Length: 364
Image 1 (tube, rainbow, N blue to C red):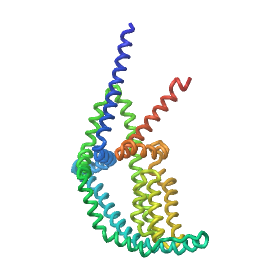
Image 2 (image 1 turned 45 degrees about the horizontal axis):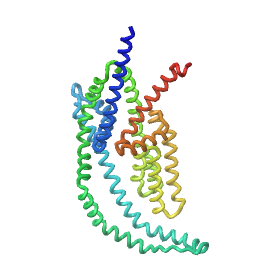
Image 3 (image 1 turned 180 degrees about the vertical axis):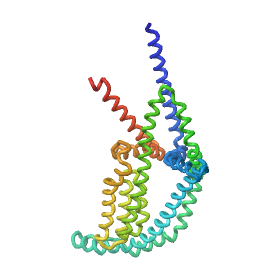
């Protein structure tokens, strides 16, 4: 009479241990393959974000003519890499140009600071600056003239680390290929994974996976919208106050907004540096501070609540910790996986909390 329950219990324990062993082996394999996973993870994240757009393009057409999945994938990929190329074409020349302007203005700024600060230090402490503006100008000019030598040194270093350079170029060239196949066959991949789920688990697993997909997709797409809106705001605001590098700094501050507080903080630092070198009075720097202060208010009170809301269900400090912990443990791959894993954990914790609140342990 008691042998059947024992057999069933033993079988369940065996099944649980088997899946635990499979999970451990899977994690070990992923850890060992981390150095080559980066292009695949980036491609998978881009494919996940862009799959709904490809689906919509496939529905477009005239009459019975429809855009095929392959052609829709190529259209979306062209848009993605077109935007990335455009950003590089905008940012790199601007940063190079403004770097030259900063190098030219730096000696005069140092001279002005010296003329203001040195008399005060001399009268109160008997200290004088041993800084020669003309000498600084000469050093900077020589360094800019030898830029070709620096470039040669960089090329020599790259040549000495040929394997690393080849690996980087391989990842760059591999990314569009992997993205194309993942984006074209995304629905088929998801269906194949779903077929591997044990029949007894399919109902609950499908429910949790659907919830994770909703949370993660809304968060990622909403965050992309926030990045675009804030980039436009910072560019327009800095341009309105007359900052030289308004376009470059505004785009950087907006695009790095996916890491909480990193984009505005870095953008503010760069903007203050340029403002101090460009403007001649403190009154001209204050509008730059106002742009970033107003930007933080708009982002936290209007843009993020409207476009993202509390999609991931975790405090921003937890999101920051997840990104830093992922980077510390698994490098750039960990940063890429931080948000998806955090979203999955958030859903899992909510289900665990609900189960606990409905359990006898809590009720009794």
